[in-house]
Amino acid sequence: MGPMQGGKPPPDARDPNAYNEGARHANFGNHEMHDNAPFGKVLVDKAEVAKGDGERGQNLEVEAWYGNDYNKAWVKLEGERRGGALEAARTELLWDRAFAPFWSTQLGIRHDAGEGGGRDWLAFGVQGLAPYWFETEATAYWRSGGELAARFAVKYEILFTSRVILEPELGANLYSRADPERGTGKGLSDLGFGLRLRYEITRKFAPYIGVTWGRQFGETADYTRLRGGQRSQTQAVAGLRLWF
View 1: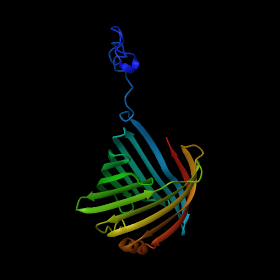
View 2 (view 1 turned 135 degrees about the vertical axis):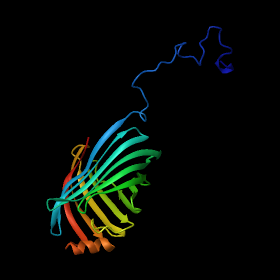
View 3 (view 1 turned 90 degrees about the vertical axis):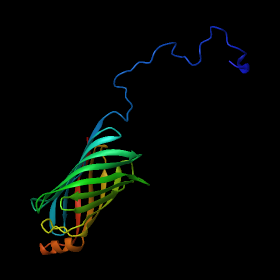
View 4 (view 1 turned 120 degrees about the vertical axis):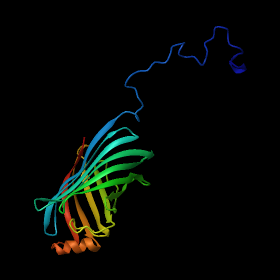
C-alpha cells in the first residue's frame, strides 16, 4: 500500500499477488482453447438442376473438412451430369494448413472422372477471404508427364436481408497441354459465371434459383464444336444449399 492508501500494510495483510490463497493450478480435462479443439463440417454448396440452350442436367458441389483452426483434412467434390451420364467430375483430398488470419495453404491430390477417362494430379493452392470478404481459391496442379493445370474461383455474398442472399461466383480453368480425350485445350480452357439467389429457411437449409453462363476458349471450344456442342452456354438453375 502506498501513501494514497494510508501507509504501510499491516504484517498479516494478504499478498495482492496471491489471490488463490496458496492453491495450486489444476488441469481440467476438455477445457482446451477453441483453436485446438477439433471440429467438422459437411457443406452441400450446390445440389441443383440446370436447363438451357437445349440441354438439361444436374450439378453437384460438396466440400467437407475436419480438424482445428490450424490443420484440417479437406475433401472437395464437384460434378456435372448431362443426358443421364456423368460428363465431368473432380474430387480433391487435401491437407489444409493456416498461415495467416483467414488464409490457408492446401496440399493433396485430385482425381478427374467422366468423359475421356480418369486423370490424377498433385494439387497445391491457397484459399481464404480476400479484402472486402471475397471468398477466393487458387490451385495449381501437376501430373506425370509434366502437364500443369490451374483453377481459380472467387465468390461473394450480398445480403438483401438476413435471410435473402445473392451470391455471384466466377471461375476459370487453364491447362499447359491439350488433352483431346477429355476435350480440354492448351491455355485458358473455360470461364464460368453464376448468379444464385437463396432464401435461408434456416442457416443450414436454403433453396435457391439462379442463372449460369459459361464460355470455352481456344482448342477446348474447337473440341466442343467437333462434338456438336456450343462454346457458350446459358442455363437457369434451381437447387438447395445445406450443411451439417
